[in-house]
Length: 503
Ligand SMILES: Cc1ncc(COP(=O)(O)O)c(C=O)c1O
Image (cartoon, rainbow, N blue to C red; front, side, top):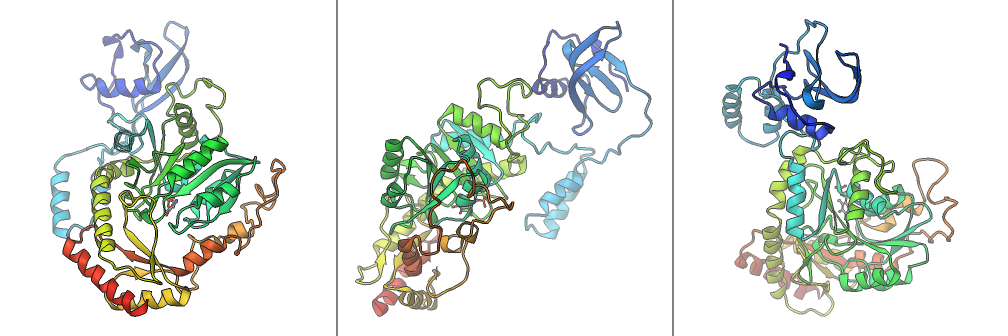
């Protein structure tokens, strides 16, 4: 098949990549190019009249043409080999089989889908996608939901953190304050950004202690990372004031509190940047995915660069940088359309889900009596905590261990460190990567970095004694969003029985 594009003259010049794909997919009446069979590139060629043309070219199996004003069309060498027209049935079924539908239902789906022949594979990457990108829709919805100017989809919570740190220009010579109780990723991403993590205590809310954070600020501090742990929100007033006073970034790690609020504002959209994990292990999420929020256009630009060093996000990806700092060596943290599509559905459930958890957590806690030695975790915003875990503290490790096993026996899902010695990546004492300054390469950067002019923090398992004590005494009761009021009262009654016995 040879398509003579001269038949359709266009006045479009200076086509960008986006244009190339848009045109190819809009000129359906003229020709149809199945995705995967089209290659486009920018370059030059000698046209029929012997002139050298700078243009964007497209090549299909049979045709080579320039899209600059559709003026050059050249027949290619006659090629016999042809890719079989398989369509996307196998791939579609491979996805459908990830859901636990019965064999019978899957067979019906397979038969229904097989009736349509040669359906091309969907484009599962966001950029140059002929269809509206699901990742982009997810970002737009995140902006609308959380009230943020910008949202960027990335491929994990860890990538979100690394993207935010790079966007804020955190690097060699800088210190970043992180809480002693958080999933290790918040800290690991500081080290992979080549900065020094300074570990600060959490307070009884199990979130970063603003007083200890303040005490650990030095002239080298570039950012504070606060983590809304187990759905419970940080003291954002104190932390925002602290960051403003020292003119440093406040980065929220909201991986564990999607849908949480502080003073009516969504967490993740309060600090300089907010990072979310949308992995399958989180209350909102599917697959491996993350989000970065910010209100600042420049931080968003730098975040875009860090998440896609191929610069596909730029209006003209190959153009020189529009401002120093726009282009630097970044990563590929792009979110796939699979995760974009599923997480768009998930994120639309977030607000109602957080409200159900919060309501049930409050109903249970309001029905628990006041005890002398078993104390509830104080909250920074009772109405804003997502509340999928209620936390209490016993007198000591042994006391908590006793309470936890009594709660389990009474049919209440509870957990905690108690006397356990199992390792846990959420507690700084087990971060031997930091305690022993382990790095990917032997020279030990960033811990040995010549740009670092401070004295390294005294990394050791006893550097944050308050956190260690709190973690030994904490006991967590899981809250279910689908409990009825009666269920909540029954759970509270069982807790009251156990606590009265062991207080
Ligand atoms: C507080 C916190 N930060 C960051 C992460 C990292 O997210 P991801 O696993 O998506 O990289 C997690 C995940 O468990 C987390 O709990």
